[in-house]
Structure formats: C-alpha cells, structure tokens
Length: 548
Image (cartoon, rainbow, N blue to C red; front, top):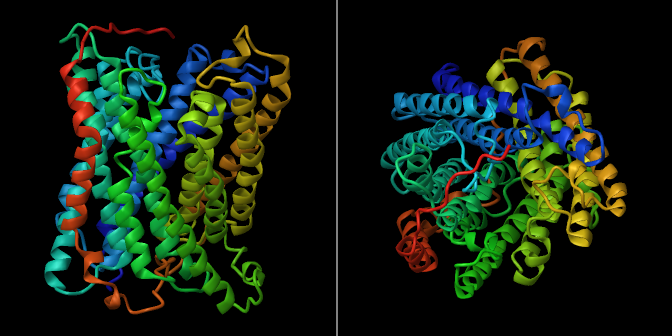
C-alpha cells in the first residue's frame, strides 16, 4: 500500500484519540479526590470555587471518563481498524469528518455547564436531577456524531463487499462495523430519553418529566453501552493480540459467533438495573435477568477462544506443559501486557456481573460501593487498560515515532493492576458486608461507621496508585509524541491470521440480515409491551431539582 494512502483516516483517528485522552486526563484527577474524601482527607476545598462540590467532581469523573473518553477513543479506533483491515479508504471521508465535528461541537456544548456546576447530575443524569439544556443537547450531538461516523463505516464496508463478492469480511473490520451497529441500535434509548423527555423539560417546554420512563430509556442504552466499550477491546483481543503473542486466532467462526451473539443479546437486558424500581412487572425483570445470564455465553466463548489463541502463541515461542506457555508470552511488550492483564481482571468483573443479575443478591448490593468495585473492574480495567495497551502501538503509529520508554509503559500497566486490586476488593467488601452507599460524600455522612474506615483507607491507597499509573501513562504518551525518535517505518496494526482459512467460515456467520432481524425481534419481545405501558401511563409531572 502507498505510505500515505490512509493519511486522512490517520488524521481523523489522531483527532479522536487526542480528544479522548484529554478527557481521560481531566476526568481521572477526580478519582483519588473521591476516595481520599471517603477516608477523611477532603481536598475539594483546594479546588473551590472552580469545582464547587464533591458531586460536581463526581459528575466530571463519570462523564469525562465513562462517556467522552470511551466514545471518542472507540470511534477513532474503529475508523482506523476498518480501513486498515479492509485495505481501502473511507467511502465518504467527509461524512466521517462531519461526524467528528458534530461530536466535538457537542462536547463543547456539554462541557460548559459541566464546568459551571450547571450540570451536576452524575453520569447517569437521572431525573428529577436537572441540568442545563446545553448539557443534554451537547451529549445528544456527541451520540448523533458517532452515528454519522458509523454510517461512514457502513458505506465503506458495503463498497468493499460489492467489490469482493463471496469473500469473507476480514475479522477486524467485521467486528469493528458490528460494534458500531450495536451502538446505533442500543443508543436509540438514550436518544429517545433526550429528545422526548429531558431536552423539552430542560427548555421549559413541558412542566415536568417522568423519572421511571426516563430511567427505563436510559438503561435501554445503559447496559449495552458496556458492550460498546468492550467490543473494541474484543476486536483487539481476538484479532490483534494473538499476533502480538506470536500465535493465530484459534477459531474464526467462534469469534464471529460471539460477536453476533453480543449484538443479539446485549441490548434487551436493561431491567436488571431496575430490580428495585417499582412500576415494572416482575415478569419483565425476570425475562431480562434470563437474557443477562444468556449474554454470559458469548463472554465464555470469548474467554475460551482468546486464551486458546494465546496458548498457541506461547507454545510457538517454546512453551511446554500445562501452563508453561504462559511464561513464554511477550510480557516485556507493554502493549501485550496491558491487554493480557485486562483480560485477567475482566474474568473477575464478569463473575461479578453474573452475581448482579441475580435478583436476590442485587437487592443487597444495589446502589452500594459493590457496584463501584464491579464497574472499575469492567470499564476501568478491562476496557481502559485494553485501550491503553492498544495506544502503545497506535499512538507511535500515528506519530511516526517509537514508543517512548517501553519500560515505563510496562511499569504503568502493572501499577494499574496493583492499584485496582485494593481499590476494587475494598469496594466490593464495603458494599456487600456493610451496604455502604455509592454516589455519596461519605466523609460528610453522619452515618459513617467506624468499622468502614480500614477498608476506606485501603480504597484510598488503591485510588492513589491508580492515579499514579495514569500519570505515568501520560508521561509515556507525551514522550512518544514530543520526544521519541522518528522512524521511517512506524508500527503496523497487528493482524492475526486464523488457524484455518477464513473462507472456510460458514457464510451465515458473515451475513448481516438474519442477525439484525433476530436483534430487532428480541428487543420488541423484551421491551415492546413494558415500554408501551410506561408511555401510556407516563405523567410528565416531576419538577426539576438542582441540589448541589
């Protein structure tokens, strides 16, 4: 391929990553502040009047890290992976550029009220907590911009398939475009919440809103967004990591089947976040709980296939015995190590997810620090640490330079896990044993119990270690972009071959229509009737509240 063939796509990817990492840098500063406050060290006064409350910092932490960083990183990464995997340029590059402008413009609109304490509604923005209309409009534009970029990827894949009849879509491109399709369907819930409820309410066009309907629409998107975060990591775990380990993809058909099952099963599960909500029939809650258990099946497929692929790599590098291949994996490669550690921690987070889907246990851990511990294993480690590992080859590629200080990057990855272990374990214990509430300024809570303190201190130590790891990460990234040596041939995207010829993969695993139809049918079955009832009985009467 000509060296500059994807210059525009790389430029688009670089802008996405730049904005994403900027959001991550700002958002992570509030993490240690929260756990230190819980342990009795309140530093928020130092930030006043810029940051006016604990809850403003908590909102910035959640929105910047969970929504802005992830969305911009994912859209940029998937743009890169799609064109490089298909070996073809974007079909309509101006469409993708327009999507980026929409996302960036929306971020600016949403950032203003966030920074002015006019949108302190946490990252779930449950009504009746009320934010400035600019916050809702801005986030909506971010989502719409990501849709526009997704359409750009569809047109690109469609043109490739028309030019290559009968040829199986390269797995990396397949997984990338499927992720965008899943996101577009899943985010219809939050789009409906914004357009039909929150924006008219915040503009004063209606006198109130319906909190239950808003929460239901939020969780239509709120759980599958976890898979929007995870699937790009899976694209790397399935399609790139085996190459970095010196192996091959154990089974291309199993990998594609897992992705299709994520598309079909990951969306109609939102009611397991609303077990404690009145107004929703226990029948529908039970149905969604069963589907939540079902979505663990493609997760297990992923664990088996990815580990088998890594075992092939370890044995190709001379590993023998039952586990001797593990030590032969390229643990000195920070890109590999960060993602391998993310896989290990995600296994623990996945087990926690199955526990959360149990109605009885969920009633115990609901809205406690258990959820915070679980969330940081899944999003803040499985996803974020994978994205960090990916950036350790992608940023040098985009900058045309070597990775600055791979040893520091390696320390950063291990330090992340060293911090996450005490942070997550202590939060799980605080939630399960003591029912300590989340989303709460615990240091100021009159019910703070002395027996919580040892675990709160452990959590604070973990949080500070995590923040130190973040600082090391940005030192490596800035060193790479600004100070590292330029190279004539920068790192290529690692692409793993499959053990068997991908043309042997059954055609039904490369056909979109039946899987999309199955997805729509299952959504209608699981959400159609209860949503219709909630809409029919909706009462737009809850006034807005601004309490911080």
